[in-house]
Length: 112
Image (cartoon, rainbow, N blue to C red; front, side):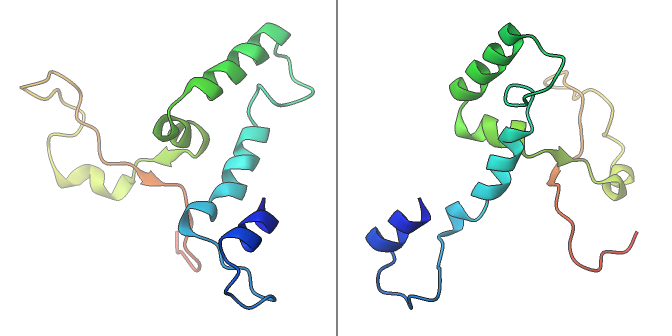
């Protein structure tokens, strides 16, 4: 796939340099995430029917839903106390107000 991208799209760049578009930079992460799902694991306690169901669910998801299913997001703990509304129902929609989620990535030299 990378060879085809190189020959068809990025043929003006230096041959020793591989320049990827922003959309392809997360592809290895998503492929590894798919391999680790119950539908693609070889030795799990899942039945064959469960595996087929999970694979069907993955193939029928939209791209946005699949990104959230494969690449988890977390709630930042430091923002929970910023507003009193977190954890309470919204008066208009009656849905529980949750903090905004962030991607699961660790920055270098992040202190805990």
